[in-house]
Amino acid sequence: IKFPSFRPDSWRGKRYLYSGLFDNDKKLKDYTEEEMNTFLYTEPTKLKNPPSNWPRTAKFEGLIHRFRRSFLLNDNFEKNKFRSDIDRVVTSKVCPTCHGKRLNQKVLSCKINGLDIADFTNLPIDEAIAFLEQIDSTKAKYIIEPLMQQLKSLSYIGLNYLSLSRETPTLSGGESQRIKLIRHLNSPLSDLVYIIDEPSVGLHPEDIQRINEIIISLKEKGNTVLVVEHDPDVIKIADHVVDLGPFAGKNGGKFTFEGTYEALLSSDTSTGKALRRKHHLKKHPIQNEDKIHLSHISRNNIQDVSVELPKNAMTVVTGVAGSGKSSLISAGFEHQDNVTFIDQKPVHASNRSNLLTYLNIFDDVRSFFSKETGMKKSMFSYNSEGACPQCHGKGVLKTELAFMPDFTQICDVCNGTRYRPEVLEAKVDGYSIADILSLTVDEAIAFFNSNPKIAEPLQALKATGLDYMTLGQSLDTLSGGEIQRVKLSRYLTESASVENQIFIFDEPTTGLHEDDIPILLDSFNHLIAQNNTVILIEHNLTMMTEADWIIDIGPYAGSKGGKLLFEGLPNKLLEVDQSVTAQHLRRYLAD
Image 1: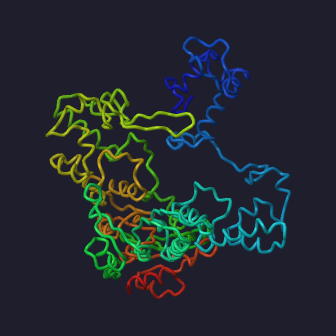
Image 2 (image 1 turned 30 degrees about the vertical axis):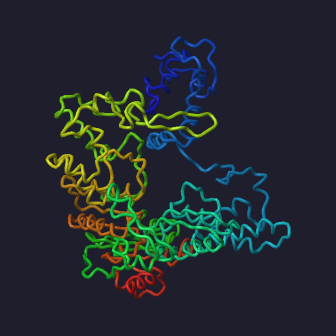
Image 3 (image 1 turned 180 degrees about the vertical axis):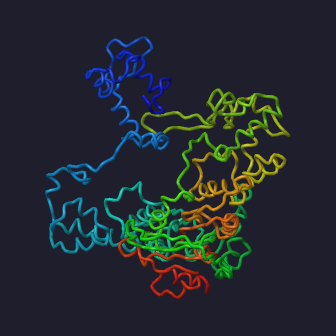
């Protein structure tokens, strides 16, 4: 069976090899119809006289049944891990009976004003509102009135381009957050505490104004709202501000300010200084006559749009959420070889992978410890011989409870370090391998300063502003913005020295404090200095002021967007009246 997790020595492979139902030396092409049906289509069944090496409680299940259950019907880690292998053997097509509507013909035959229920839920929100306004029925008003209230709220918050049938896994973080907020907007409840984590994520300043209105309305109903946020426009509406710092990681965690927004503005904190800072457009934007041409691009709401971007410069693509920015850029560059998309999608990672494994230097760290201590290299791996015998290198013990959530506790043998006691006793300059994994990037650079193979990738990580992270931090605990910067760091090392590449970043300022943005800009300028082109899909106004070239898509979202409003030097954008980006950029420069 040529699929990775069905190899003969795997537990899945053994379910066929040791079933006793087949001649393991017989070729599939020689199987009888009955043998092939047994192999592929048998429903889970208990074997009558299984061989001695067959697990006592196991059932035999045909390959098609097992594969569908394991990889097509369930969402699990393996589904992502074997995505390319699944795509090799699985083809998806729209159902020819219901044409993708999912419902039976009896239900689909029921129509209102010519639309069945699937037609209705496939309408964009604004069109769904127009459809409901045409229905005059006393019976239906109890359904229509609350539905209209929610739909109008979704439209107001800038989600008018979505449809009710849109699958939730396809929503962006910003879209999901706004939908959650809308659910509470019309709630009659009071005396609640709402904790909202970065509501500005993925939002244009125009959309943020409406988010602010929702936050204020929740407060005015008699609720307490706590907002974790970096965006100046959201901080501005606070009644009370708490500022944490002064820096990140081990160098943070202290209260640096508490008080009103006005008091914060005059404070000596990094946030206060950032909010006081005056902003100006880049004085000498790069004006390269050599351009990249994207011609007649059509995707989603983008229809036959052509744009040009200067090479070896930084282009910022702007527009409200849902205007078509990502559609334009992804469609325009998807078939080009020299393009690197650096997004915020999680790297395929389990809790056994960390920063060192992603940077491909954990092997070098283990070699260093092996050479210095004389102990076998495999002993310094918590996925191999060095693993704690009790938790098997996980650092935690998980107890699965039948009717309650799993219970997890730190392993009491290795105290969460993942290693055997004898490995923890092997030290270099007083540091065990577990101590190294607890170091921040900054501290590790100092420790490995004479070992460039290890220090150089860590220096690149520091250049993206991630100097506060610890080397052993599991990749599955990183935020979207952190993942993006870890990916970026791979291209900032001396040995990488990439040239003539196009780097596309989707909202790289996500989760960043205003004081962190200059650090990110230095990374982009480093790429440009090496003759690369940088393209940012971005809402952040500070980042717009640093652009060499701006492309603005709009004017609004969905069917009301998708048009090229502007392409050119940033100062010329300020003259475009129909651009909401121009309105907010003018305000930002004047503040």
